Image (cartoon, rainbow, N blue to C red; front, side):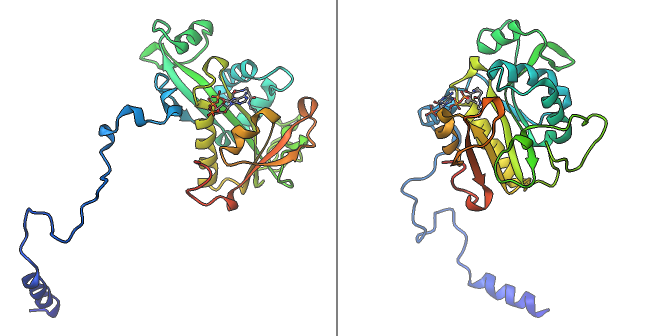
Length: 270
Ligand SMILES: CC(C)(COP(=O)(O)OP(=O)(O)OC[C@H]1O[C@@H](n2cnc3c(N)ncnc32)[C@H](O)[C@@H]1OP(=O)(O)O)[C@@H](O)C(=O)NCCC(=O)NCCS
């Protein structure tokens, strides 16, 4: 008999017989983790409770989402801050993988904030061709580009080449640079009818985590108004001070999240 099998036979003979009783020396966990379905709903975090009727799902955006993104951008932002339709088209075309849309679906006939939106805007696409009444609704989006040569958002990063449709450039001096390591978050918005339900916070956290995990850059930079500093800080961004950007009249604050300074499990989900 091979030597390994003899050794196994001896090991088996030395083992105690199997029993259905718990092992005497395995200490019982005084606070065992209940199965998820046993967790009382009162323990679900408030920020998730506020969106339970919305059933959000996230997806990358592309040129086919231009009408929805253009509509949402101009509904959520003041006119002097909203990106133009052409700028949105540029960003979705050259680097749609840096964007995320937060969607839901609804019928116009069912009550609630989503059906109100479906009734007000007839142009939402159908979820699938077999059920044309069920509409896919863009509730929030993040649209971004990458920039090379600055760790902060600049006016050049926010601009785009005027000839982008006819002359593709890998690394133009304005707009998206494929090899840039600063991911510039240009637009985060949630439809005003759905504000305060936690969608913006969840969208931001999910997106920052995806950018980091996918190794798409070394940092995320954005500019924001003073009132939103806390909102971004709670998602792991640092306030770097007043921005030099003059976009939309200036008066912005620079916020940055360096991926190196964020260990895998901390900070992004405070
Ligand atoms: C900013 C925005 C995306 C937040 O989305 P939201 O879904 O309403 O945000 P949430 O419900 O996730 O709120 C998260 C927290 O941020 C705070 N917050 C959200 N919007 C705020 C605002 N405009 N001013 C101050 N605080 C705000 C909330 O009070 C909340 O705090 P809490 O968790 O302690 O209650 C949304 O208000 C929006 O689209 N605004 C217009 C576009 C814009 O300004 N975008 C930011 C560009 S820099």
